[in-house]
Image (tube, rainbow, N blue to C red; front, side, top):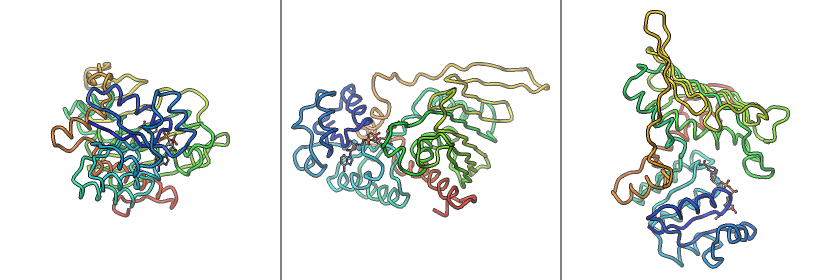
Length: 335
Ligand SMILES: NC(=O)c1ccc[n+]([C@@H]2O[C@H](COP(=O)([O-])OP(=O)(O)OC[C@H]3O[C@@H](n4cnc5c(N)ncnc54)[C@H](O)[C@@H]3O)[C@@H](O)[C@H]2O)c1
């Protein structure tokens, strides 16, 4: 399958490497408007200068491809998506779908009308912890979950000048989207509202708020909290995964560091404190997101993390931002 890779920044160079490892994917062209980033990609990634175009239109006119892999900043995603759909190509787009909810809706509609596969790279949910948790909750191990609490303490995005530090609410939008998507995925439920408080700590390096407390209410009554600081310079207990705690009538499922535990300790019942081995994640020699995208196209089915589904995770982001700005609980229906 032939791909055009758009954007050769930090993440774009990562995706070039992932595509090269994928047996059935061949990157036939790249797109990068910045001369500095083109030179860096040529020097570091063994790319031929002539295979890098200045804009997507020029690449589409010059090469035959099956899909576009968009690794540009969020504000550019709509433009890349519309050009891709107009050319009739499939699209694998980096998260977040957009930095604007109405733009995200337009993109999803255009992809559906074009009849192409359109997937968003919510890679976190493909890891062993969320995969195994999703299975155990589906199997009812702890009964109907009543509450989910997530805490995330990270030293996040500290490169000076990048959009991660100059744009508002980036910790909530760019990092939070992974966690909100994993909430929906593991619970198998969609939220109905968000209530958020955000602030910044005096030593933080982000211009936007990088600390938050968000409460989501889900359709079946589950309450989920997301407590995070993106500018800690201290202990980071669980990387970018954070620590998760699912409360049910038959105990808890907890993510402790990178391990999963089932605990039940009520005096009326036998005590359980058991580490649960993580399900096989299919091996990491092939990127699981890329593998799912290619398989869905080959099998003529809708991929997991398709853009229409991703819009529901995006709704959590935009409801939380609106709530933080307006200082009130915001219903998803208001967006
Ligand atoms: N899934 C993950 O875990 C993960 C991790 C990091 C980044 N990301 C996402 O990847 C995307 C890119 O992030 P990044 O850190 O590489 O950003 P970056 O700013 O380092 O790179 C973006 C690149 O896109 C190029 N670009 C800008 N406009 C363009 C256009 N019109 N056409 C072609 N190229 C254009 C820029 O010149 C730059 O080289 C973002 O959406 C980000 O959220 C995802």
